[in-house]
Amino acid sequence: MSDKIPQIHIFAMIISFGILALAFASSIAYLIQDYMLHNKRTIALSKRLPALTTLDSLINRLVGFGFITLSIGILFGSLWSERQIGKWWSWNPKQILALMTWLVYAAYIYSRTLSGWKGKRSVLLIVVGFVLIFVTFIVSLHK
Image (spheres, rainbow, N blue to C red):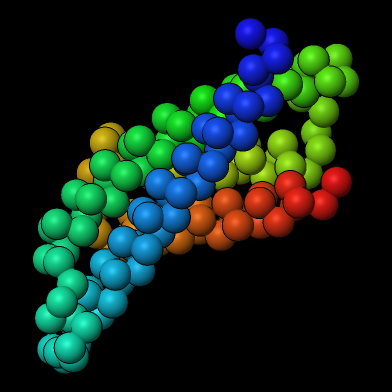
């Protein structure tokens, strides 16, 4: 199993980044559609976008699955770190950014389930989360 830890970590992170990228794209679509509806503007793009409730539901499901795979990826990354350097947590920038990303998506899930946030407020958390994913990915490329 220990020789599979890096592969599981990398696979889970790629899957989570992909799913959360879809949630981000859906969030941008949500923001565009919301803007168009509230300003009573219609363009060809807004007519092709799904309804806000459909986008909101899609984003919520994507984040739920993406959060699970992100959690698995971070867990296996910690196990890999333990095997490599003898510590599961070393306060390096990649680990700190991954934790911050996880916390943003956890805040999204909390705000949706316990605080009742919907719509624009919750979608903005997805945008922040994806910016952190992008920064984490860039930091991961530099060793």
